[in-house]
Length: 135
Image (cartoon, rainbow, N blue to C red; front, side, top):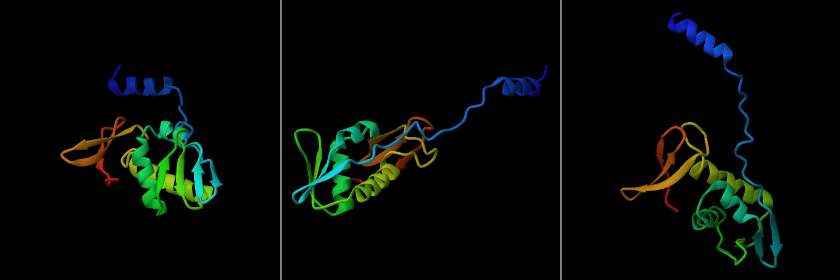
């Protein structure tokens, strides 16, 4: 049996795998106003899902939203000003596009690494490396 025959046989025997987007879902920001501050209740859950450092994401949100922010003792982000859930979700989507998803394969299996003074997004799935802006 030739290579092509073996390949055809293997392809026929392989199960059909349907791609789904369920594997990686970013939690929807749970926000509520508290005086002149917006509390991002599930900030820690978002960090855990994205597998990123709190200071890096918080710095991105501050820049994107044009505000100041800090973490409280419960792991929540406290953002100065009034922000709707949709605005935070949009900022979070921008962060994920820039600092989490691989620009080559689109998978979230990435790490932020520092090489020669530059921050790179390194994909564990396809091996791609791309530079990202410092935060």
